[in-house]
Image 1 (cartoon, rainbow, N blue to C red):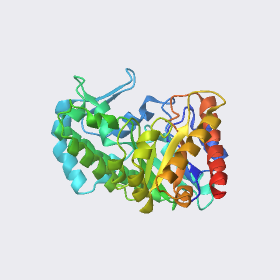
Image 2 (cartoon, rainbow, N blue to C red):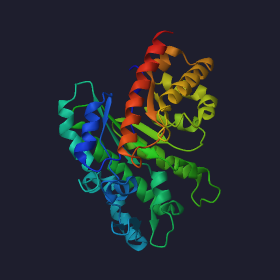
Image 3 (cartoon, rainbow, N blue to C red):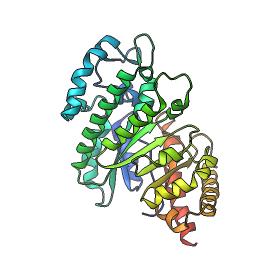
Amino acid sequence: MPIAPLLYGALPHTTLDAALSVLHRFTMPYVVWPQLPQRSFRERSVVQAAYGFPGVVIDEQQRRVFVQRAMSESGMPQLALDFLQRRDARAAMTPAEAAGLFAVLPMLQSQPAHVGCKGQLLGPISLAAQLTDEAQNPLISDSVLFEGLVQHLCQRVRWQAELLRRTNRTVLLCLDEPFIEVISSPFLSIDQDELWMGLARVLDAIPVMRGLAISGDVPLAPLCELPLNVLMVNSSEHVQRIVEAAPHIHAFMQRGGILACGCVPVAGDSTRGAQARTSMHTLLHQLHDAGIAYALLREQVMIMPVSSLGQTTVEIAEEVISVTCAVADDLNQALHAR
């Protein structure tokens, strides 16, 4: 696949029709189902991921999601049994939390046969770092509840993948880990290996193409060893991390892995296209100098915005999507000349 654009799931539109209209206007290899956090509090990524977990409380009026610890703890045995017996219907999402997921299914019927669909879900580390009990204690500090979240998310990704597979499209299902940096915190009571294993288990539960989107300054070498097809990195801010991990990225790409580079600024002005082109040309040259052939880069690199578009304005989001597509086209032409 030549260099192509890819999006995170969140968009700032407040209606489904407006969001789907944008997705219709731009040609991409994967149509995302739109998360619309400005449409409803329940469409925030932490709510979408936490919904259905034992003891979870979604307080729309106070715009808060948390768990009642006693109820969560008492619900762990049943959750474990459902997980082991693959009763994944318990982890089903509803239109209240994921209206875009259900709306995109009929839209895909009008897309060309080669166009796939992309789903997404907040990963276990970032969910456990954000989701707290009623006393504001994050669940990442509790091994038992973290294990419950891992089982819950394994079921949710399996359920979502099965729903998207009914479209008879290639499906890419991505975990978003915006708080993965917490894994290196010296203040965690959970062993770091337990967090890595939890992330790997949820990825391994995905029965379709697997993606991982990360934010923050973390070493990339361990991520390249995870069971992944697509690794999404903010290449604008973390060029050095990518270059220092070039041997591991090379091995990842030789196994068929795709590096999705978040290079198109969301903040800024009309120069965002020029900034993205310059940064990507520099990065591709550095990766080539580190031993990755241009032919491999041309086939296994994707272009993304530097971050989610869910909290920006509609005008900026649509401009960023347009620039992302244009930068991918320009890089294709440049690399084909090499």
